[in-house]
Amino acid sequence: MTGIETPMETLRETVRPEWTDYNGHMNLAYFVLMFDLATDRFYSEFGLGEDYCKRTGRSTFAVESHTAYLAELLEAAVVRCTTQLLGFDEKRMHYFHRMYRTEDGVLAATMELMAVHVDLGLRKVAPMPDDIQSRLGEIFVAHAALERPPQAGRVMYLGNPVRK
Image (tube, rainbow, N blue to C red; front, side, top):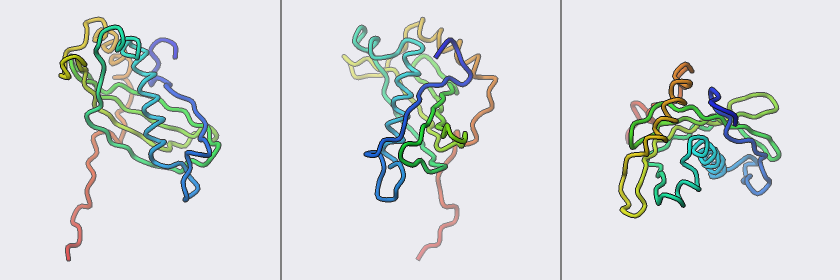
């Protein structure tokens, strides 16, 4: 990543054979793994990576996520993930990952996340440092021009399910 991209490319990866299941496509656990790796790279862009955790005793915890699986990924498929910051405050971040097949540009999956900043010594939510909030503000301004993802904020339900 270089500077503030809109949205930021946060991962390129190839689907490994051991990530596929008996249906012949990538298992849902590995979609989550790839999105987690994209999160790590996103955090590093504005100073909340592993070095920050080791240096300060503070980190982030995911508190909610929603994944949508939109297209299959087969073994050896190359994918890329992008990340868009949807919002933040002094203690929370709301962001959105998209995963694309590079061969045809098809959107394969999305993941929306809410994370909190945590003091690991106290195991409690704590404000992020001002410099981190400032960097997030720069990213947010750049990403505010992007269209809000249609999958963001969706609720899962059956509507009027048949009851027996």
